[in-house]
View 1 (cartoon, each protein chain N blue to C red):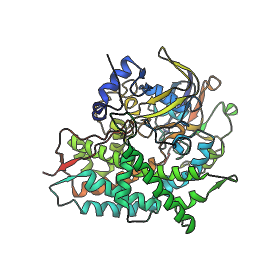
View 2 (cartoon, chains in turn green, blue):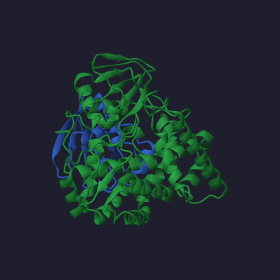
View 3 (cartoon, rainbow over the protein chains, first blue to last red):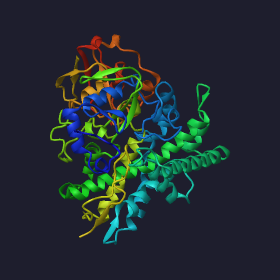
Length: 387
Length: 106
């Protein structure tokens, strides 16, 4: 009998065969292991993303939610509260307001590349992408330097889940609590000495006389740090993996960096690191002959919608000329990724610099150590070797 | 399902059937219509799903504050019938709507 357990290491390693069975045979599937419904077809996911009144985020959006987080972050609140929170931070993430970061990002990328450019073999994640992402985030948010490595380690840990208990383990909760403390320290510092940066603005902002409450300031800042490091880093490692596994595409990109942007879009479709998020039903919904009840949780499997042959021709082929508009790599609807513009800019710059120094490489381990996570999918280590 | 006619920047008219509740932006991107970027995936944060509404305009809800703010940032000429396609949800009432896409979104 078919089962889909988002906590199983087999799903961490390769969810795509499971997704195909879900789409073809069980498009509205109850997973007893996850204790939620799973929607896997592109159109069903888009329809759910559009209908926030029915598919609510207010009970949490991570497949395995962190304690006391739901309701106090962008991703875990519904309009109109969500729209007010988002209006406060959105300005800083518009493409035109990010241009000033391009040169600092390039300098960070060059510095990180210089540290590996003579190595015969290196861990793309430990030796490159984690250094790049944490330094970019610190520059973007104006965070004080000194704690980068710890911040990065905690961000990566807090998104994981325990495959045995199917819950957050004590180490994941500890990492989350550490990050909250860290964010609280930064917020307190910025209130004392406000600067022209996102956290200063955000922690003191009022909309229509309505201030953000302390929990919203704290948990939204915590989430921004987590997403900025873990999500950007996770996707960068997936992109690097694709570049190792599809050498023809890599050679085209190294020869013509203009193509990087299209390859990023195809990677967001092909194997985005943000594989699954969840919603909670506010009313009964009948779909594909199944009735999902008000109060039930529903997994939106973006990674499956991105491989749905009903939407994308030859979905299992990695094709950098595809231009897959409408992909779900950044989600969609009101909760679509706030950081999509900064992510696109950062990845393009990072790989322009990376390919200049390291155009040829291959992956060393056939079986990768995949992160245990019900929400995200990326390797914990990606060893690359140069010819 | 209701019908939208997109007029692509090159002038081709493309008819698309759209499910109720889907946005004009999703109708265009999921059907490969030319002239739509939608960089922010529908969160009203990028102004790259700019369109000119050429029919049914009187039936559309007025743009909300965030859409008006974003319309200040469109790349092509902003006209009185400029809207962001991600903010217009399809319904039976809009069946047959005609939407022109500008020459540039970025």
